[in-house]
Image 1 (spheres, rainbow, N blue to C red):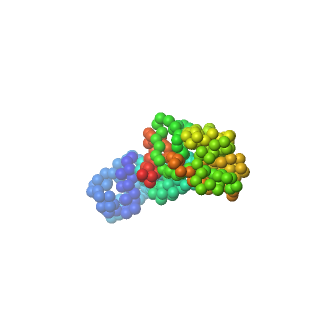
Image 2: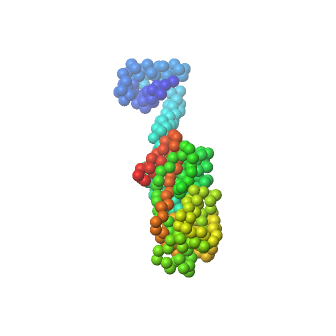
Image 3: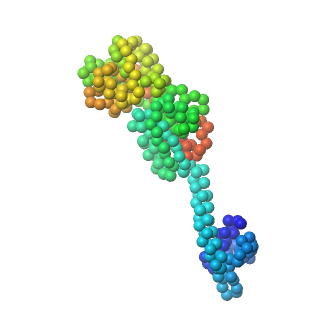
Length: 293
């Protein structure tokens, strides 16, 4: 049984006129008649009663029309969905992100993607840098947003999507809060708060190198597992923190931020598997890359 036979049958069933149905299908009437006879032979039933005056659908034909019409509509939907999937218009993209990327970087990119791909499901997950890298390697997420430096490993590609300056965050009553232009050297022999190494080894080590390059030897280093906790500890007077400027949004009252000049910017990247083949994921990656170019 062929799809063309089903379409021909439905055209005749609707018009009850072979000539008009043939015209609609851009077929000759003899060709249409051959298709209907072949379909009837395969089914083993008569679908139409016809004579020179009129064509009538049989009871078997009426039942077949109802089922065939539903099946053809389902088949047309399946074909359309397949084309949408191939074009990246449907599917699922699993996105991991660090907290600061969720606040600044990810929302406008997601909004832009949703405008052009409204039927693609986006599964959003807050995850630490180390968790995202492992998730990309295991195939548990498709795209990650985290800060550099990091070592995603072979097969993981990155695209820079955001950069910002580092700031020094101190309690409001700290002497550094009143300084016009504090430097990292001013943290020598002071307690310093830093992002936990197990969560983002590359970022953690970058901060330590910056302190070392500035000739600052902290009296003690205190690690925080997330940026919100880091800022809360600053407010509590535990120490001063070096962090990207956007971390200031997590700061409770009593935390003061000061610009730090002469430091490299903090860079956020989008990471994805270099050999990614799924169209929806590729569409998201391409949109982000174009928006960040």
